[in-house]
Amino acid sequence: MTVLETARVRLRPLRVGDAAAVSAMMTPNVSRWVATWPSPFSIEAATERLTRAIAANDAGTAFSRIAERKSDNAAMGWLGIAVIDETQRTGSMGYWLGEAFHGQGYLSEILRPFVAGAIAALRLNHLNAVAQVDNAASLAALRRLGMQFVEQRMDQTPIRPAPELVAFYRLDCSAFSPSR
Image 1 (cartoon, one colour):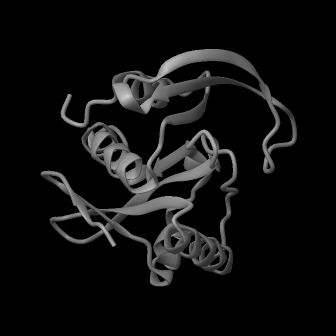
Image 2 (cartoon, rainbow, N blue to C red):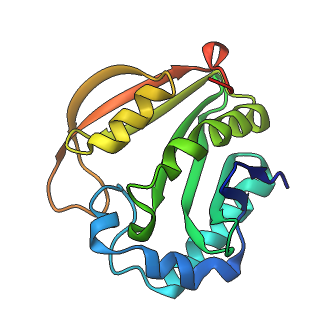
């Protein structure tokens, strides 16, 4: 399994043993920005999610990685892309970092190499992403990747009581530059 590295971060394959760290990082302040990660998120739920994601990685239908700080091997967050349309080779991306790692430039550092690795591994033509319109950091990250705004609309997620206004973005992978 491919390990990707930047100056400060290692993006490595998931392990079931990551469950405790994943559970601990899924705080209300992180969960509020992600569509399918409730808080609290138990170790059992994290183990189940990791097991499913590892199977999808092994099957070639997803590319998920744990972000790990090189200086101390601390798990920092999760990045994942799942194939949602095999005919069109389209993926859908989600990512999050634990609160302790916000505001330090980590997402900017790791997102581009992660996307490049996923495009190659999954042979993607298109990549979709969604972010809440109030999530300025995530929207800026999507634009820095070269993703194009498609539309805003109300979206109901599995863990929210009411629909939320979100922005949909799309990337033509043939125009993606891994080194920009």
